[in-house]
Figure (cartoon, chains in turn purple, yellow):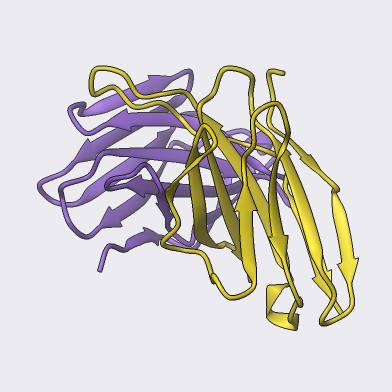
Length: 111
Length: 117
């Protein structure tokens, strides 16, 4: 069965810290992996998409890496800010493009 | 449009009533997906369309759920005879046609919150 797991479930850090969110998945034959953020009561905002042939993607203070052989992806957030507080979701597509989601990491960045 | 639009924002139905949700994908996107979010962050894939054709319906509870994407109309997700367990936020997403093995991001709408009482 194809599953996606995220660790930790929750994280609270002071402003300015660099942090790493982890995502692991079964079955390395993925099509792509997408990171999202979700603010309370809101929809999903796409942060980064990593193709199966890529090792990493960067956008501003965000960097996502992909290691298919070990079934892992990490989202690195540099110099965290209170505005980064949200739930971060990892989602994997194996085929037919449907996304299988992890249960998310709830991040709180305090001033 | 440049965003996925979903209507209504909130929908309240008594158990056994019908519920119908609508989604307008981003113009030019040929794929549409429906997901159900229950209990915090548990997302479940329901169905996807490639233009007006069903692409993958492996997540659909077929006995009560149906969906359509007709030309020149918003896509719809209909639940006949709603149950308490159908209470959730239903998200629609769209993406462009993959080309040359390069897949695209899925862009999500704001969701429709369905409450079954």
